[in-house]
Length: 358
Image (cartoon, rainbow, N blue to C red; front, side, top):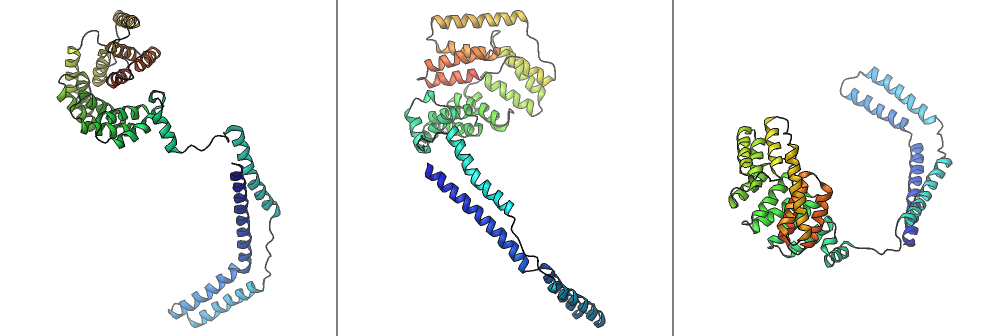
């Protein structure tokens, strides 16, 4: 490590010396080749060229030629100012060159870890893959799954998991690529089309674009009446300017949803936004009833935790109510409990992303 810093210092000093030598050489060269003399010589050539082209008479040519020659001789006889190096500037440069590596070394010794050996990416990736995937950060897990899917290019589940993790790692384009591949390998799995549609929306900045509409259209074909497909396809119509049709479809969706469904608030708010109205104010009594139902569900799961569907409903309910602290607590607990069941984990992930009720 110290050998590295010694070499860095030597190279920095050598670079500074080259810069100073070049500056001195440039200044000396400037003194040796006076630009005034070159200017007057060019003027003589231009005068001759004008005369040859008939644009200047012979008397005018001789007069201009004599004047330019006189200036050339005067410039040649002028004393040349010798270049003297600025010792203060040179000293400042050398001081800065010496101080920069020293300061960097001091900061590294104070803040860095000089005793830690190099950790090539391949070694880190191997360590992540050999360890507990649940303990990895989303970018680390995504790196592992990218390697796994490259080894198993026909594994739809691997690409589905990669898409989910890429989304958690704030890489929406990576999530879209992985989920598109998963949908090609397993076109009959509705949960993949739903995840792809949601990822397309994120990648499009929140808009239900044509790609998202295609994904939700496939979801609707596989699961007619799927609430997510109906909701986002209606949103796509609203974005395309077909607001009346979008409102009609959302009202039909609302009529088919149970009164206690936590997603009703999002549908009602969407209808209000499309119409340009203020979002509806929820009845306090209804709000209290919903919160009571959620509290009852949480109590049941505390007594009997082996209920994956119940955990998914609880996580989604907290997300819709905007209680992020309880949502995150329930989500972490359930995800750890069902870590070996990818389908449940995927449902929990979707529930945690549910839109907050307005």
